[in-house]
Amino acid sequence: MGRVIVHIALIAGVALVLAGCGFADVRSPVPEFMRAKAPEPPSLEAPPDVKRLLSEKLDSVFLAASNPRGVQVSTPRPELRGTGWTACVKADLTSVNGKPLGTQTYRITISNGTIFDRRHVEAEDTCATESYEPV
Image (tube, rainbow, N blue to C red):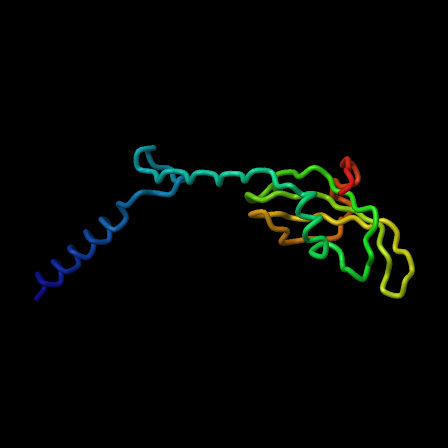
């Protein structure tokens, strides 16, 4: 009975050791040939035609009730994290009750040729230093 338990423990130990023999993480402290290959960085899409996107889908950035006038856009820049693009868009807007809001600036995110996110710019955004072209 004792030999059977020893054999089972020995087989379980060997199985556990062999289970750890797979390829290691990219950052593991093992020799290079044992490491998994680093993933390829995602390829960057071609720069989008932001003027065309805005002229076709201006309502994805500004509400129609805000009556956007003098719409201007910056040059698209590659997104820091991801494969998309970002651009700054500004326009003179009107509030719902008809009072002028002044020039409002938004940062838009473009992926696969579609505007999928917009947010009002904040102090740390670089939209204030961008050069703009009319749409």
